[in-house]
Length: 526
Image (cartoon, rainbow, N blue to C red; front, side, top):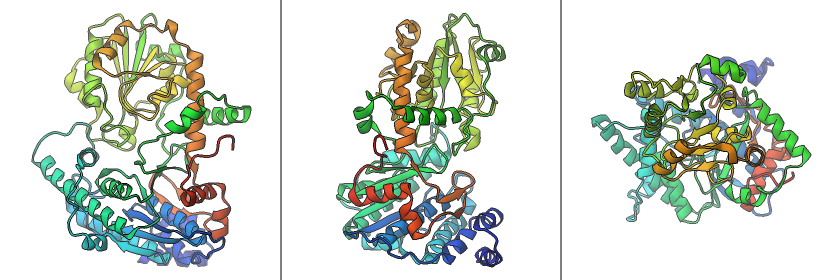
């Protein structure tokens, strides 16, 4: 590979890996890993473990580098570490993008090729998924229904929230069904090897979901991880998929415990940064905050009418898809809400479309869906396009009642003392600071009769702040070892010498939890 050779030469002349990665791209990682000394056992564990990373998508250099770094630390503790790579065995996956069918073979080959090159350069043990499948040529007779993973995969594949029927959808459903079956077979074969731990990203979709479920049912301890909200952070869970940020057990223990002065200062500082995302991986607020008066003038809102603000999600994202409780899908929720407000001139509705539609993309933009149903918007409804420079906190200032599906705004509004209705299943539902709705009748009755005179704004703000501290400061784990320009665009690694890794508080926390099967949550008061 030419790029790794050029990167190696550059490093010999004193060019830093960050600079090489920025100039040459992800292939420079292969050179950096190859020039790093093979990991030594520097602090052996009393109970060495057999740990397998179900990497699969080796070409996703965020996933492969996170797993390489954690694996390096585990090797320094004397554990055995292996990586399972998909060697072009899944008929459909996250690499095979819709409308790019002619590139599928090359994209698949590049994904496997990069992962293999990176891990081979590191001297890692690699298990090709084809080897697992060959030992388990047919799934168990008790094959599960993988409908949840198949439908979620289809929504992500087509980047929509409501899948239109047709020959293409039928064909892709068959492909994802076969992918789910192969994931199941791989999980069953891996379970037969009886590793002590299996670590994987996501734990969802057809790529990982069935394998995770087979391993969990076989009694194999499984860890899933994903990127956190904060820059250079990850989240880790035992057993469940990584798209579900379940802190409910710890929340039940600490929700009535006031934050101390230090904790309050820490979360206040971080929450202040969220207003423009200066410390976050993704930037979703494009505009500067405005005053109430400026915002009302901008959108021609009546200051004498109550304002209800609805915040959408990206329809296909795993954090949004298949979480419905009150409505059949998020589109149905938005359309019925607009239709209801069209009959009520005594109140007004803002629909703020999630900026992620332009940040990560969608093929079913909410603005178009709304325009198709409502060529002329009701006079008391305003729609804010995803690319408009409108800060969500400006909308919060003028909101009497928020309406959310699963968006994090459902936490952020209560932080400001603004009551918020939740219509779907999300991690903060039931935490005590939202209004959790269970039926259409209940939802529209609340909209018709809303009176916030009994709302304890101080109480919901206090609870939301405690929850935010748990979620952002204790649940998320700092992970400064991969240098990423964007969510998945890793170009170099930092601080990966064995002793450096084991001495880092975050890595100590991860390794301790993996070895002892305790929570990855930072200790209360730490």
